[in-house]
Amino acid sequence: ICADEPTGNLDSIDNQEFFVGASRGELDPGEDYRLFSAFWPIFINDLSLPYRIRLFQLGLEPFFSYACEPKENIEVGTNLFFKIGLTPLNQRLQSYFKFGFGGIYLTQHCDEQKSQLNFTEFVGMGFSWFITRSNALSLEYRYRHLSNANIVKPNGGIDNQLFLIDVSFDF
Image (cartoon, rainbow, N blue to C red; front, side, top):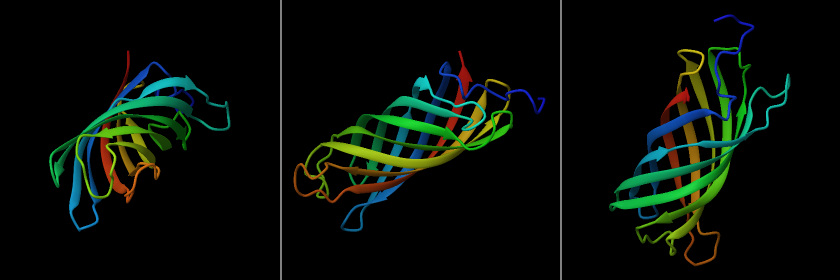
């Protein structure tokens, strides 16, 4: 790959990504909240500015999570997110910053959250390693906060640390 040519198409809204991973959070009585999650980002718009920010995207991210602790639970929701590249697009290893917010439905009632309909916000960072010009493997870390925005008490919130792996491809 030539240094002057773009390495891949993570800057393209035609690029597809699929993240899977696991997370851990802590509930008030010292119980763990463990999840296995799948995310499918759908890029809405490429807002990249030439020669300044290498990658700047807006997207929607439907997700599904299975909680195995403290009780079995399903989470379903979607996030609106921004993805900002930190390295030039002509690098085989690219880093990025991601943040967003959205809505989530939990099938489980827990002491920390009175309502099953909640909100999420997250911040994260990741690295993409381009295998070819249009295929990449990525690792991403996210810190996620879940709460009902004080609509219903209690609203203790649930914080999770997510570790995700991704496969990116163009179609």
